[in-house]
Image (cartoon, rainbow, N blue to C red; front, side, top):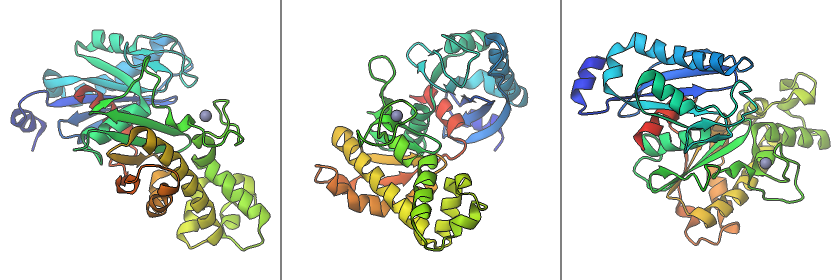
Length: 330
Ligand SMILES: [Zn+2]
């Protein structure tokens, strides 16, 4: 079916445009009413230049979608944008993200709205990705979805009654910085024992390195690290685990057990219908979902905590574009 026929088939608001802004690139995609990404493009993000140069890159990315699909403009429900925080999703203002020095208190939603004459929404990556899963992905058909992205960091989004839960000023749902150990390792945010400091990709690599250092057991991870343990990554741990490496498995089981402590807290607080995991390390940790579910009752007072499904996200590396587009489908 061509885009035109598809547009005729759907009654209204056939498309949304999702823009995913990062510290080095900006990606834009055209997304249909069912959450399928029909076309996407990406360009460099000049984050170190001035505010106008940063915005020009966003305009170029959006324009290249319209150049390819001019028919989309007339039936566009809106332009959604996800950007690094901190930002104010209620006013659509980018505040002072370390990854985007070009923008300080930059009214991104208003600028996009003015430039393209269509409604625009701005939110952070994890909130947007959570919404995409709740609208079109693994959490579709559920009212209350907890989303966690496991990768270089850990982010969360809370979909409460089908909408993003923002809190008083838009700073809610920073679940990656919920601490499970006040004597634990120092997190990048300054607190101790945040789940991000314990279970992110770099934390998994650190845990595996520690196991290797204290053990004489042969491990494939030593070869994969190329002779220098400092170079060991979470990807190496994953590869070793899949090859049957016992130490890699131990490091991942310990990580899963810590995630279960954290999830127990979040379940007691929110009791979501479903918990969805995205991000670069989610696939790997999904192999430990049954273990996490077995551990959960130790860390939750909820008698039915084990009934809550733990699922892998539908959107992988496209979570940014899909999430941004979903902002216009709330
Ligand atoms: Zn933290």
